[in-house]
Image (cartoon, rainbow, N blue to C red; front, top):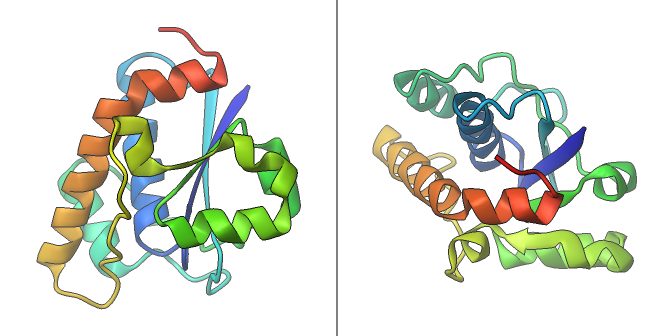
Length: 156
């Protein structure tokens, strides 16, 4: 089974939302049995649930992330992932310091959609910021879905 790993700062908002969106997309295309989706944070509040607003925004999209618990990024996660999708350049740098030999499989999420920008962190903001973030994540994942599959060697 292939593994997609999403990484953000605290593993409370962006990466759990992106993971939920990717799981939904994989299920819709019948590929959920071939790909495992995980998320982790560079500086997580270990064991904390996803942000209440992130849970609410995902529920509006029919995605349940209410059981999510923040996980920290570690060397084993990096080594086992087939592709690592980060939200910010700072996250890529953190992975470089942990495992420079694994950098070939680390992409800024926007890069897989042919762009190059950070996904802004909605943490602590109003719910509309979470909705905008979810919209952006969904758009980037839709645009980059085939590229992600290609990178991990999965065909539709």
